Image (cartoon, rainbow, N blue to C red; front, side, top):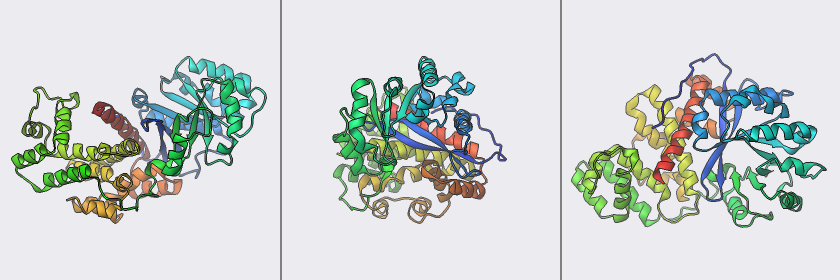
Length: 430
């Protein structure tokens, strides 16, 4: 379990909330997060005419939130609006391994010599660069792209992907440059790009809301047998008080039992003596931890597209963040139910089945069902905070900060802490 971050409780600061977007590689593993700021006071991520100020604010808030803890586990992708920002002392002093600076190629064209000099200096310190393609190739562009690791194609901008011949010209003369496609909206769109790259080499990085896209969530597909067995075990944990009967149910599913014993004997549990039976594993882990572990297993069991691992990461972040911010207000007795609220919030996307039908198969407290199905109740306000960190708007931030009476820096710190925790859980589970 990661250590607590030092958190400031200055509720008078302007509400500036960290917003994240998951970055995936071709194996659909979360390799990092792109960060931006939601500023309710300004109504925009970018202060007009002050790109360097906006960049400095982003880095400053990431540092306050403890971003250095995350950099040892995955990368932080930072969109920068001004070339002058590369000279910020705060960036020069930061332990930079794991930082990726994103710049528009047009920004670099304005001061090519300055960019090349700064890029070479920062790359020596571990910072990597991603340059956003703008649809044009101008003299000197090759020298700029040669300093980058990725060429960014933004699907929210017009005609970027359709200009693949120009992109391929750049890739041909920059052999180390890799395509990074941003703002992929639909899972079908992602699958097409993954399997049939429009470029002369495969796309290496993706980001966008496609991971949690619910366009296929209402197909009402039948549940796979292995996942149904896990859900039956989850219900037995809630309904059955006799550990021996629970152990007997675990023994009847050798695959789950094998994974359970492997988990029980892994370093994450801190077990001093080896657990060799279902009874021993249940005794050591405890019912709550076993329930949570089986919930994780729902995501990585059975056949799928591979996006299950990205959904697991998002669910872990949601669950941990709900647990942290909610239990501080409601009490530790609510911690596990808050965690499960976050974990279950993406089951409809995972199963391609309406959430009410999925949750009807599980024995759950009313507070969890109210939050997920009725958008109300004790836990729902904390779920709104999590949603705002993923895809919120400045107005939503302003409303949440007012209604919850929470210091935004607390939310930012808990957000980054949850990202770190999720990465650690995934790595320990591999």
